[in-house]
Amino acid sequence: MGGGTAGWLSALFIKKKYPEHLISIIESSKIGIIGAGEGATPNLKILLEKLEIPEDEFLKNVNGTRKTGIKFIGWNENTEHSFVHGFKQGIEDVNFYSYHFNARMLAEFLKNIAIKRGVEYLDREVFKFEIADDNKIIKILFLGDGSINCDFVIDCTGFSRMIIGNIYKSKWKSYEDQLIVNSAIPFFLNSKNSEINQKTIASAENFGWIWKIPLQDRWGCGYLYNDSLSRDQDIEEEILKKFKKEEIIINKKIKFLAGCFEEVWIENCIAVGLSTGFLEPLEATSIMTAIFQLENLPDDIFDYSKRDHYNYTIEKLNLQNMTFIRHHYNCSRNDSIFWKEYKKKGKNQELNMIYDNIWSNKRNKDLLDIFSIEGKSMSFTIDQYKLIMGNNFAKGNKSFI
Ligand SMILES: Cc1cc2nc3c(=O)[nH]c(=O)nc-3n(C[C@H](O)[C@H](O)[C@H](O)COP(=O)(O)OP(=O)(O)OC[C@H]3O[C@@H](n4cnc5c(N)ncnc54)[C@H](O)[C@@H]3O)c2cc1C
Image (cartoon, rainbow, N blue to C red; front, side, top):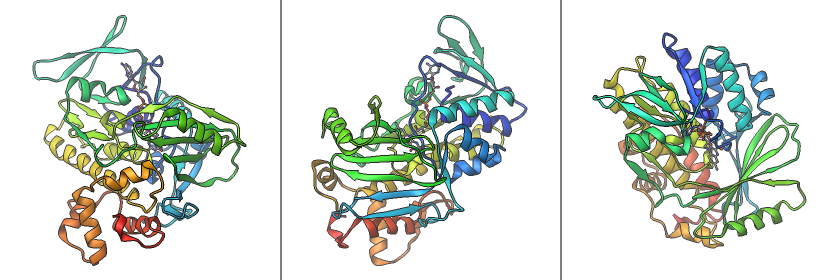
């Protein structure tokens, strides 16, 4: 269910992994997709290769560019300071990259491929589910009339969180005590970009930070902030002031709360994408996690003995991603209410442990556990923590952490 980035990537992946099953996508074009989320991590490139989607076709159809990392600007007290967090253990390497893309064009592009490959497409608004005695969903009912029987559902309903949240009421793990960004005002800058190898720009600002994503025909941007610390109109004014020389299109504000569901697989439903939760856009962990989830689906999707391990793995990945994002905010920038607010926040125990280890230069088993699952490294490494830390303290001042 759902026809955003998560829905179509899931449909294509599942069609390939379980060719014996009939796959349908149900989405409501009336509700639409979020349309944000235009930068990814290298696992998207790997997935597209697996799905046999040629890179040149992809880039052409989504106005895409290659993404070799993120350029951070102004995250310490020297607001001019910048550095690149590249994808190869923190280092930028033009051969190890992901992509920037127009999110709406991506959904359309993936949809056309999926339909050609035999995925059934139903443009319907879902309003109800029929649940069997064993608590599994067996039928999805459409507004107006009509329904479809099902034996397994992937909940890609975005912020509606229709099944994993509303039907199965998975327990919510809030990260608002760690991540204070809760609002975004997306905007576009209409200037052309010719270079194919590019970086996302993440610039620290007065009320939060701005992402700037270079596409072929425009920059996709957004101001991230906390709307109880600053007013929406102040953010809009800041955007207009900062980019006064450019043609700007300001989009509708998006609200979210940092957190994730503890279980993303309940009964015969797995949630993928925003329906599982959301941290914030820094480091583009959302699509990365969606792809990780797909890659980790069991060989037999009806093998429910794999469910607890799957849930444990995804919960841990979310915690790792959250901890790494939180780490960026332990910076020495301290010149406004937003940055000062972060200085008042306590850090989670994983982050404290990582810092203890970095300062004392010792490695212990607990630390390995933070970075991996059963010995397998999952997302960000200690070298990446060090890179961010080394740059986010202009004067090497430890007191901020
Ligand atoms: C401000 C912001 C910036 C972001 N930046 C990044 C980034 O840089 N990198 C990154 O990796 N991620 C980013 N994300 C996350 C990213 O947008 C998502 O991971 C990605 O777009 C996938 O979204 P989705 O498919 O889960 O949801 P959506 O795109 O919202 O799709 C939900 C689908 O469910 C359907 N639906 C909902 N209710 C019903 C119903 N009742 N009946 C039928 N259909 C229904 C909708 O029609 C739609 O098709 C960002 C998110 C936000 C909010």
